[in-house]
Image 1 (cartoon, rainbow, N blue to C red):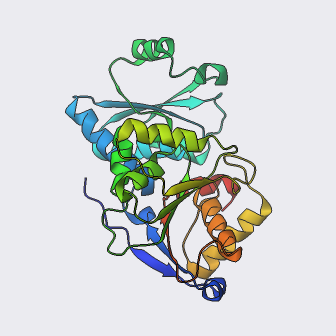
Image 2 (image 1 turned 120 degrees about the horizontal axis):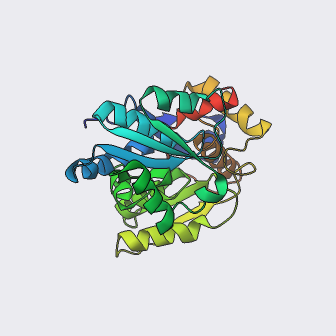
Image 3 (image 1 turned 90 degrees about the horizontal axis):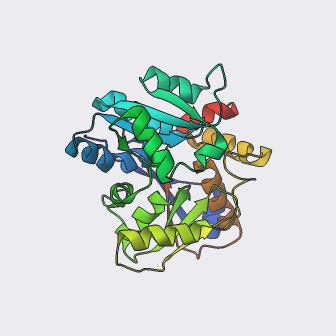
Length: 295
């Protein structure tokens, strides 16, 4: 399971010079040809555990545009696993680009109505899935579990430099939990929530307490850059993404990375970071999600 090392590149902008802030991007989107960014980090040790347990089938959950569904399907094809995707909601034809790709990779797509999907962690639904599909290795929606956190710890383990701030998009909280654990009090970690609401802080606290006995407080979640909620966008966000891509030739997605990088720029404009700060942005990939927004 060899991957490429993610390069770190500095991004230059007039406002960065004006505010005296240096911004760098760690290109986790480039580490794997099929499963890029944090999705590979989350899956790595789950795939190894599935193999250790003797499973040949992976079952997981997600929405119709899920980066996670896309990643599990690609990983299954690449590493010889059968895959089953339990998709939230009703089937809609023709299939979108995410599900078309998943099906092309051999993933068996099954649909679960939203009321049932909300109960997917109950014993009854788990029993029904085992009855329907037999023996499988279950990966949670979004891929976040203790093995995913272990994989995400490695995002910063190969960094040659230290930074004052480490910034990242947040969905289920697994990626930032790995960063917090790995950095162990070093620097300040800022997560930008792609979800509406302020519940992620408590969820991340629980993930960390379940994963490690270490306790650090050098992190925070910003909840003001979700643009209406998960997978919601506004013209200002799409304009920002296009402008950034035109200037730097680095693609972003509007669900995660576009929102968090927008947040970094906004905080720099507002003087959040002290002069001479070094800010690292973790590019978590997920570029397949661009297709649903005409990018």
